[in-house]
Structure formats: structure tokens, C-alpha cells
Image (cartoon, rainbow, N blue to C red; front, side, top):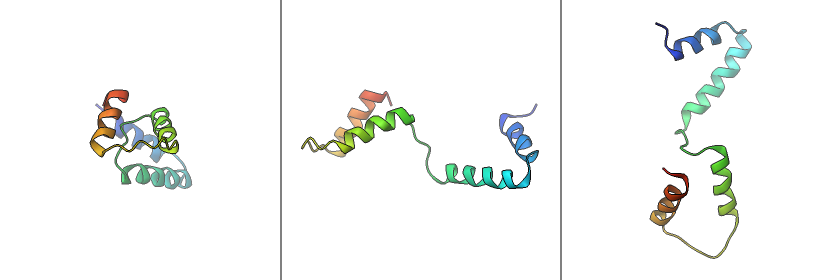
Length: 73
């Protein structure tokens, strides 16, 4: 049985070399950083909070507790 990753690699190998190189670079970029546990929409909410300076300063622990409560992680 072919695994999902093997099927994806087979599809990549069928592409022209220039497209393979471009996609390989994208994959390397994705693998170079830890995966995010937040969706892009959730990151947008975080960015809004970071951009709004309401004068409240929280400890790292408080920030993590609030994120887990809000995003369920």
C-alpha cells in the first residue's frame, strides 16, 4: 500500500524540474520552522492583540493560559 507521502512524492516527481525545484524550496521552508498550532485566522486575532497597546502587561504564563483558553490548545 502506498502511503500518502509516497503518493505526494510520486506526483512531485511527475512535474517539470523547475516546478519540482520551486516546490522543494517551499517544503524546505515549511520544515525549517516548527509547525504552528494556530490557524491563520487565529494568528490574525493574535496580531490584532499585539498591535493594540492597551497598557496591560502579562507574564508569559498568563499569555499562554489565555491563548489555551481562547484557542483550546
